[in-house]
Length: 261
Image (cartoon, rainbow, N blue to C red):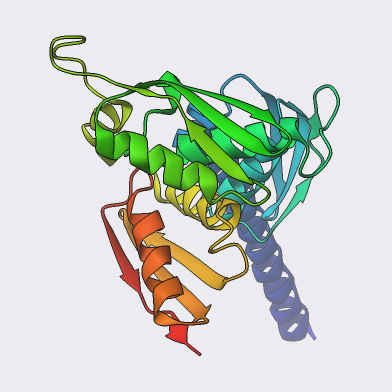
């Protein structure tokens, strides 16, 4: 009888220690998820002006607070979802002010600006975007004709854009000598961009470009190397996905394993 009671007590003790350890592990994981999100490149740059609260419980993350726009809301969710240990994300973020209707000029401006922000070869900080009846006008400064043409190409490929008027001024060494473009600045610090942020930026980039928005694409990032999976309708779509992703901040290399149907 005493032996049975001893064995029972031992089992209960071991079980209790097991559940305590599991709870402690879950708590540590939740703390790490919350800290990783706050310290991610996306949260410290694109979302730094937003009021976002992050709470994780057993890997289920809830986002509350306010953000500047729908793109910020989606970007926050995609970044957190890409963190190790995250099971799901409940995005309760509210957008400040009025949310523009889909395909309205205000909606297009926001989409074009976000698209330009995600690419290293164009300088979104030097580009002014306006819209009227679906026609986008780009003004500002470009470091080269190539950069100007890319800004035009990226803006034209946003869903809902009818036409792009590119009035950007191409700088010369004489007009602004020694100035680095945003892409050049970011290339010098690309090591600091975490994989979760890269994955989120890649997903948003593919979604915002009309040529890739309908693709069934999976995205995984390890040490800056992005692997694309899923399906493409043809070789041109697959190659375009590689091209667009290669120009996203922090991406060192793209491995495209998409299957052409």
